[in-house]
Image (cartoon, rainbow, N blue to C red):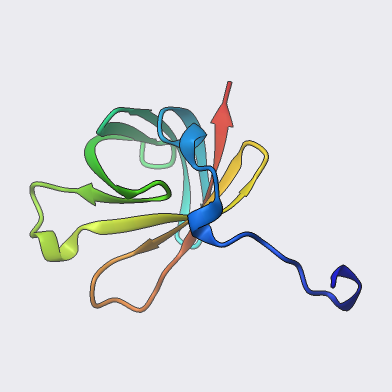
Length: 114
């Protein structure tokens, strides 16, 4: 298959997302433009936005091994972001975020920091 430009990747439910549940990560995105650091422990994560020089504490709820919801108490639940790990290459995970009733689903990249 590789010779025809088709690349096989395992279904999301077969990815091993365990190493992205806890730790320190660098976040990079082209659309929207973002660069930051994520420090994730248990059901919380701190996001340090390096462009805005800001820090946000978020509560996360894991919905499956590779999918979680960011619960933002200051926003109604209908505006909470759902994130799914869609691809893993080594210590890099590609995340697709989605909001209810919004078609735009950006893909972000995080690198695990050792």
